[in-house]
Image (cartoon, rainbow, N blue to C red):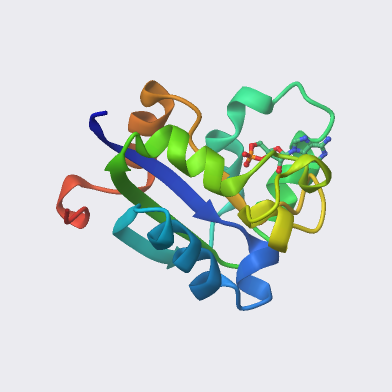
Length: 140
Ligand code: CMP
């Protein structure tokens, strides 16, 4: 399988509970390398643009409010089949459906406060990485 890069966010519910290290350990144990990472306070404009695909969904406003409620950690993860691997490590969007050992099963509080975001496809991974990182900030 090819080496890929995917985009990840450690969300406010997790940074607030000091879970950044434990979540990063899950990525690294799965063979994903953190090749870029920064802690940021997302703006409402960034949140709205980043999640624009969900604009018509009833939870859009709540989702954006949540993403600016505390700092987040944005990351680029690299590895073999990184996009799918990261989705496996994260577990299902709703922690009630997430498999044992996944980040969301262990740490997520609800479908909204679900600790992590990960890109769902190569095109979105490329777009999401470019939204938060310049090429110079990614060191593989
Ligand atoms: P994420 O992978 O970041 O992509 C979109 C997010 O919308 C998703 O994770 C959830 O956190 C959030 N989301 C999805 N469904 C709901 C819902 N029913 N209520 C609140 N938030 C939701």
